[in-house]
Image 1: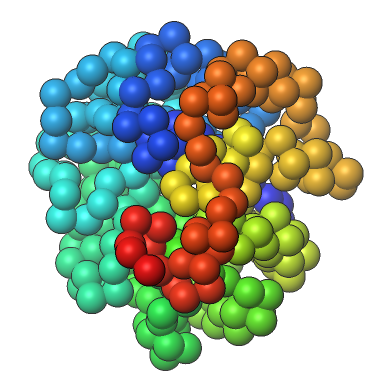
Image 2: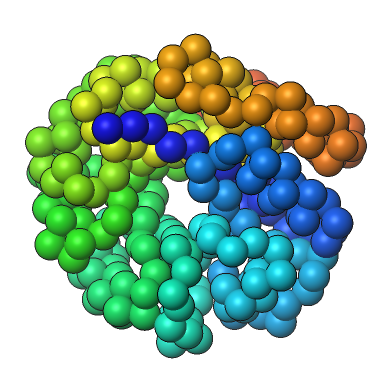
Length: 282
């Protein structure tokens, strides 16, 4: 059993920079994360759009063929035509973000995508709004459709330790051991890193995934920080090269840090407490 780190800098960070990292920055971040030993690199979004080399919005996974071999991409259900996905022999991960009323449609989409050779991770938005029974149904459906991973997603950054303590046992009891359990958190109430440690320590007997980003780059007050998570995991079984990670931050992320804001504000904290999307009005 073990843990993987999925770095979502380029995907969640797209909210901050309007997807336009620049082609050299995109390439350098992917190369650096790979060299540092990060397990999964999420390179951006699948969108119904024309491909721009400076953007992390991709029309098909083939747009990335010159940048990375195995990687992850996400799409919002209902906002991307999955018929554009060609068959693949690579270990490419497709992450499907969806709301709980779309679970039946997601089941069909997962079957279509897996038939083409991709791995599929289920990303149910706003898991804190699910009842225990709804979480149980989600987990059983993930088993039934043979998803490769199913996630606990704190979309609004509103989760407290007691929320996670309520949710984890339902996942653990209803998700088969051959399916990985993931955790994706937003840091609006400044608990993301602590919640990640709680998640890791509670599910030591499972194969799990934790999402993070360089300097926490992401929507709202950002995500779990890759550099901190890597250092924490290096205390036990992992051997991530945090010097390479830090050099990548210095070169590619600190210039963005000076230009954009993805840190805590009282307004974001209050939105998190109220369970609101970062873009919603108070």
